[in-house]
Length: 70
Length: 378
Image (cartoon, rainbow over all chains, first blue to last red; front, side, top):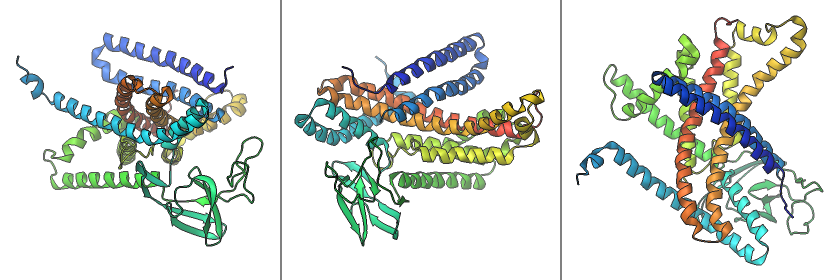
């Protein structure tokens, strides 16, 4: 029998979503930088901000999972 | 073979410095875990393996939590003052006055006020001892029933905050004075170290988000950037001046986010409030849109708060659980994999410490920028 909290599965799903999101952001940013290297620093800043927003959603899920465990 | 080009570069020194620093870091983190693991080993032989796992998660949570003493190694502590507002008024004592019993099995008598220390927190004891020998009672749902006095102690996090504030004040007052003294001349010493970072905050964070109004907000943005960054870095140092996980404490990040919220609210101009209360939608959508906009105002600082808290806490938990793998799998050979991986994660955490400070500052600037924007774009 497996004993544990189902919150772990929720955190895993959230990580999946955030992984797709950040992967897309990083991939597109790299593409943009390759096409236009002189805009690299601007793209990087925008990329970090967007990644932070995606990451926040995953971290909300982590916090909920923490509260859900107990 | 000529290796002089390697040894001459600055890169080599910074690499060597990093290597020494992180080997120190992982070793001290290891020894810190060691004492805790010993106790879990004893209980593992007595009871089940699951209980040892339970102990390890408790150890991890203990390490990222606030506490009433500063733990060095083994049984070496600095006791910190405990200040409690109890039913009988203010009570102060040093946290080691009653020894280190935090299992709730012993009643502490403070001139008539009875308290019990349970997992590092002070509660009023229950009238009768419960079945497991503690003066703590739980209800059927596992909720703690004991009441707590108001705890305004100088805890580890508070001391760490004071340390980082002292460092920031010494460094930045010194730098500011040397700018006054050497006006118009090239920077020197600490100035040369900090000038590029200050310019980075100005040119890459404040100017793009705030436009020509950036000057008034620079002090706030610089303060928040250096405060968060320094505390993130201090949290990664496992020995004395660091190791307190200040930015991984939700109360600290809440205060920081609240500062940003107050600044946006106070500086919000006509356009900003107009956007909230009379959005550009047909009038019959107002009952839906206005609550959504108001929720949006509150969610922004809440997201700031949770982002910093969760990032730093997650990093600390990750490092500690990787070290704990050695004790969970009970084999010293796991260390060969776990320790290099901890090293790797620690380097990533250094980067995360900077990125989170940057993100916090740039989002604060973005929110303030939204509030002070001159004309709406639509």
